[in-house]
Amino acid sequence: MNIAVRPAKKGYVLIYIVMGKCRSVVEMAVQYAQERGLEVIELGEELEDAHIPNGTEHPVLYDVGVEEWLGYMADAECVFTNSFHACALSIILHKKFYAGPRSGDKIDSVLELFELENRRIYVDEENLSEKLTQDIDFDRVDEIWKEQRKISEDFLLNALNEAEEYVSEHGR
Image 1 (cartoon, helix red, strand yellow):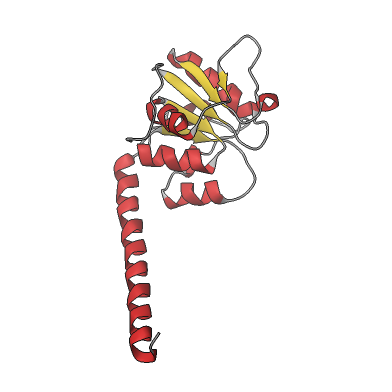
Image 2 (cartoon, one colour; image 1 turned 135 degrees about the horizontal axis):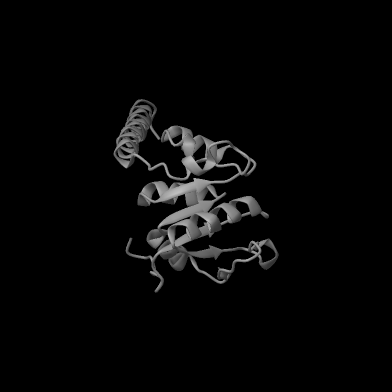
């Protein structure tokens, strides 16, 4: 990823929460990191949205530009988020990630498309600790990516061909 500005830190869990507080995801991320001997870095939008569980501390960065955000995503050991864009980039970068609760269906749609529904986490779910140890089959993700890309390419080529035929039959 050429435009990414890589952070100096390595060996961290990245938290990226958007549009409000999501304490349960932050708490799960902190526990996940502690169990694996990793640090925690949180990228935030607003200071009042930060939540650092009692007995822990981690940096919360608010002035991160796009290039740095991409760098933090690229170098994270694991990502905990409620952001569609962070989920999508985690898939692209082959990053282990977990998606916490948020309204809307974009995250659920992308998780379903790539057969990653098990990446959705809720604090009160049974077998959560088991879910947090599951790996992602990125070979399968890549197969789906390739299939979806072909579908998109075919759609665009057909639309262009139809437009070209229309113009040749009807003029402008």
